[in-house]
Structure formats: structure tokens, C-alpha cells
Length: 326
Image (cartoon, rainbow, N blue to C red; front, side):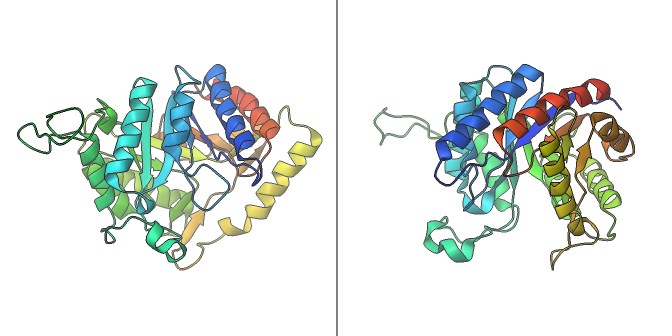
């Protein structure tokens, strides 16, 4: 199947003493991706790390630097969020972008809850998927009362989560690592995001497990239209890379190979090897990827802590791969 949608996932890393420089360089990658013909650009949201900690805030800036490219969050960990405030932020970004936002989330608990304590949302811990369901409800902007109520500076109004971003609830994506999460996402109308990290269940074979994840999502789909599948792979073409860059990319891949040989830790997390090399070699590897044939949406996932020049070179060389996969 030909790929019709090419996406980019950008980490947005920066030096501890130079956050503005790193964030500005990341915004420049969004504009470059638009110029090069990418269909969407997504940003990771990370906490207690040197990266984008507020995807909505960052993408609000990206709406003013771009005009065509889709924007996405890949992904927002909901354990750190309150559905109301997050919905308001995301709806604002979507309105500013002219309806270009894709909301990707994950629903696991906050990874640093033991360190953050009272800095986390005050609500009691929610069941695994409840925050995602509440976020979708808030984004629907349904009336919260049957009549107008006074009590705010704007006078009597029907209370509802605002702004209303029409169509945004049809652009919700769930980062599912297990078949149970994939089934929940499908039953509730969330499209599926999957990439180089999943959970071992019946099999310790990455690709067969990922195929089962996708099959489960499609079998349970109850949303509008067809289910979306956004597939991510770490792809680092070296066509125009310097010798130093190419060597560094290969060393990066080699340093991460050990984790791909078996499930990791008590959560049995599995990883797929990165694709590094000339675009022709990468195309040969992608042709052998049985999961790629299941989707029209391929996401190039960029590594952490590369330099701006590295990311620019990877994006420009990725265009050659895109041209052959269309």
C-alpha cells in the first residue's frame, strides 16, 4: 500500500541553560517540514526532562509559524493533566491553527508521581482510561446546564468548555501499548498511534504483537468513518550526512540494539531496532516491514539530543524516502 501521509515526531530537546534556543530550533523544524512537504509534525510532551513539557503551549506558537502542515501531540501523558484545563488549551490551539491539530495521548499514571506529590492534579487517581474519556467529553463542548447562568464578567451564558473546536474530537489519537488499550480506543472513537515501543503479551515478537494490536483496534472500531493508524519508525537516513554524523547515527543505533532482543523489565516493554543508513537501504528495510503495509500514515521519529543541523539533514534526506513510498 502506498503511503499518503508522512508525519514527523520531534523531541524538542534543548540545553539546560539554553531552552529558548532549543525551542526556537524545534519551531524552525516545523517550518522546514512544511516546506519539504511533510503532512504533519508532532511534538513529544515530556516531564522533568529537557524537552517540551507543554505540547499545547508549544504548538500554539507553531500555529503562527506554519499555515498548512498538520500539528500533533505525540503523546500527552494524561496522568499529569486535568481534563478541563487540557481541553481548553487544546481547543485554543486547534482554533488558532484553523483545524490542523491532532491530539495524541497516553493514559498511564504519572511516571514521577512519587517525586511530584502535591504538584500533580488534586483529584484522586482515575481508572486507566477515564481521563481520556473525560478529555473527549470536554472537547465536545456540550452544555453543562440547560439555561444561561450568570456569575462571570461576560454576563449570563450557557456554561460549556470553550472555545469549541469543531471537528477536533474526530482527530483524537491514542498511544496504545497493549491490546486492551487498543480495544478501548477503538470502542471510543480514538485513532491508533503505535511506533517503536509496545508491550509484550502473548508473543515476544515485536512485529506480530504490533500486528495484533492493529487488528484489535480495527475489529473494535466504533468511531466515525474509518479507523486511523499512525505508524512510527525511527528512521535516520545518511545520504547527505557528514562522515562524523553518519558514524554518530550508527553508534546511536548500536547503543540501543540490546534492548530490542527481548522484552524489558517487569512491564515487558519491547523496542524495534532503529533504521540507519542510505535511503536505498532504508527503503529495502521498510519493504520487509509487514506492519507498514497496513497503513498509509508513516511517522519519522527523531531521536533525543541530536543537534539542529542533524535534524535538518535527516528531514531533507527523508524527502527521498517519501518520494519512493508515495
